[in-house]
Amino acid sequence: MSLPLITHPDYSYALAQNHRFPMEKFRLLNACLIEMGIATSQNTFRPGKAKAQLLEMAHCPQYLSRFINNGQSKAELRRMGLPWSEQLLRRTILSPSGTLLSAQLALQKGIACHLAGGTHHAHFDFASGFCILNDLAITAKSLLASGLVNSVLIFDVDVHQGDGTARILADVPQAFTCSVHCEKNFPARKAQSDLDVNVPKGASDDQYMALMAEGFENAVALSKPDIVLYDAGVDVYEQDPLGLINVSLKGIRARDRYVLTRCAESSIPVATVIGGGYDKDQKALAQRHAIAVEEAATLYKAHF
Image (spheres, rainbow, N blue to C red):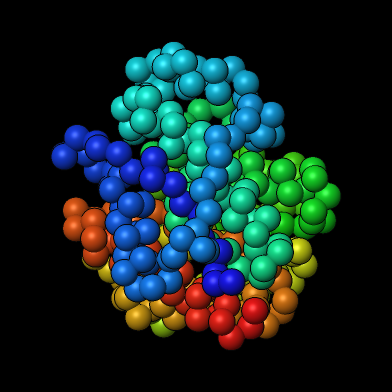
């Protein structure tokens, strides 16, 4: 079998053309991987809707009810950053199951890739920054509760700090959060991860790689994980409108190759999620998100 991939056609739907969030990128990423020959009907899996019991592992029931029933206040909707719709509800309830399925397949196969996920700004009782449900926190808590693992490392290299993940998991010692992010970027008020790596604004490939690699090695040494959830955000890209650091496409590939290779060398299962990436050219953006999957597919053939 080839590298396991998890996606769903309902991950993408039509948003207003002037909306900042690139909702079409999920469909385009899958199409890109099909064109490359990496995604086939044999290795692509679809998640089902997440049940309330799963979501409540990381989220307040009252908040879940407000979101599901379109009962959020105007202030909550502004902070969420996306207009409520039935399509948004459907994709939001599917995505946490996609990350959990990716983790379960990674435990079986060594590596698996979710072609969505990484909604790390979602907090226990509110949405923020296009993030409604925290798939990383939900997955970590579910894996630990099921006894499938004793320790989880969330290694988050999205350019923005994983503040929601850090706060939800702050009192879960078996879940180690490491965020490698631009220090002068959203959110303005940072949370405290188990390990925060602050990347200076305008950092180059070499500077970024050195900080990221040191962070990864330290996080693995401190957490001794049974699985890594890798949030491979591509908003570190030098031309990303929300990034503020200067990592090239070559630098993104080197980063993803490093993390995935080190996991394989250490026999640590790894599940990837795509995290952030913002660009009006959504096809080019999808190709950026495909880099982690390409690297995972190469490693899968070599090691598994």
